[in-house]
Length: 311
Image 1 (spheres, one colour):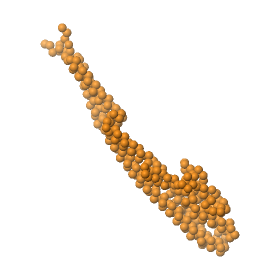
Image 2 (tube, helix red, strand yellow; image 1 turned 90 degrees about the vertical axis):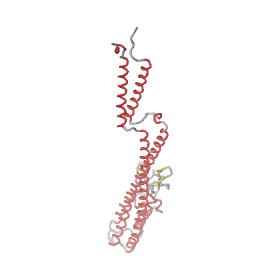
Image 3 (tube, rainbow, N blue to C red; image 1 turned 180 degrees about the horizontal axis):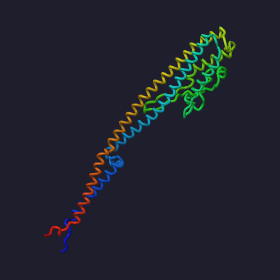
């Protein structure tokens, strides 16, 4: 008669089952530590999957609108800087006319005006990656078509100096929220160009040109009359800048809301999907010990025999 090991088939099967469970638990905890996620398939999240994906989609939606709002903010910020330049330029024209009228001297008046005209034209014809900023829906064509005061003076109407479209750029920053961010060159520049044209036509007319010295009474009266016009032009530019600033502030507030919404949804997804690394490491160590213990017990059972208990 042979002497068998202590144990039975049932005991062996039980130990194998324990080993398998320990291996599965160790594999799961290892994956969690490596990925930082509770599971790597939807099945691992069960009924929470639909809620988690809805929150993830909402976060991505908010991020997309945030990017659009950020582009709108950049555009409005650039326009604010350029409107400020136009306001300063209008103030320089007013000061130039005031000085010439006060001194009764037209020396270098038109040369200075030509320089300011060039600066204004450069602003109106400024570009970004998509085209001419103040071109509207015709942003592949320079909005201002004239390149000198003499060209402007020759036009029958100041409106002929502009070739921009009529539709302003708008950006969708939410499902039901669209912000108008574009400005048209003709919208912000007609009054300024009219002032340039008025002075240039006078200089080219029967009462011009302005001398390099003492102005005539007619020229003096003209200069004095254009000072108020220049002030009005500056006020118009400042009004445009104020409207642009209000839109900029509105977009900034909306960006804050979008950012907060995205963070809230991301945190919700994280609460379902992410693991506590410290807890996961603790479980990993525990599962390693359990698997090691099951192996040791299984090996010990296989080695035990009735001979160990015989006298």
